Length: 83
Length: 313
Figure 1 (cartoon, rainbow over the protein chains, first blue to last red):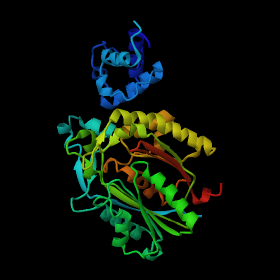
Figure 2 (figure 1 turned 120 degrees about the vertical axis):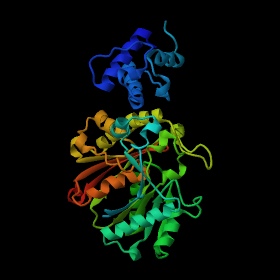
Figure 3 (figure 1 turned 60 degrees about the vertical axis):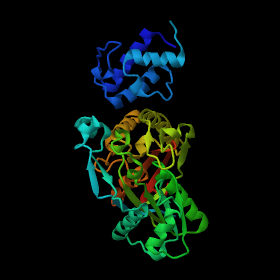
Figure 4 (figure 1 turned 90 degrees about the vertical axis):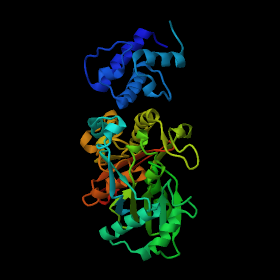
């Protein structure tokens, strides 16, 4: 399992890939829609984060991981807390 | 050598506009057009059965080809929404409605979006093994029968259509061996959870499957067949949504103009989506076409078809 900061970086990197943009400004508790992601982009984001981190979120419903914090909580539930 | 000679089609004439109901669905128009991709979905009238769709597709085949009813010796219907309760099998009902002779092999195949590739593999193998000369492969799955109105996870997606593919000698396309895949552990991702119930879909599961298992199979298929992406003239992917088709092309590094999305006015027509894509291409057939169907099961299947001029390879 990776740290919260590493996970945040992975999510930011994932958003850049999904939206093909160079810069993302998003707080940990902000909804991904504030970064321009719609519900289908959010599904793609899960796959991008899986590719970046090597974690497999299985049947994660992307709608339940709609902020960096919420996404990380799902990661903790599945893979444990490293902190 | 037998193969695909011609295709007939029936698309339910009624259209429900997804644009008109985008607000009710909580989606903006751009999302409908550019992401889901289905501006409208075809809907079968309440008094029509699956077998009626097949009969209408056959009438279209008769208009477009020299098919003769008296020659038919094999008839397969791919559907998961058969007439009544599937007893008798819909293929037998189609056999009756078309007035075919008794010497005809008839049965149904229960598959969703992978059904066309499976169906081609089954019917060509069956015909070759048993000396049959004139086969009909129907795809007909009126999902409107199992959609809960205003369940926007499904109601915006699926459309009603049927096709019939004529299999016989002197084909336009010859089928290469297919590759198949199944993950029954994820079957609940697209399912009708109880008898008489409505369709339920877990979009995240379906998208993940479409972006992982599907491209993996296509890569392995091309490798097995000693082909590269550059050898394929057109990739016909199941029209699950514009988002899935475009992302699949992107993930596989295929030029977008080789991966058509042509279901904007019909919706996801399940096992009919691939033959609907193939039918207009039969007049000037691209030499080598890769088809991949994927969905319910979860099930996926890939096949390359070669136009007659390239069949000697």
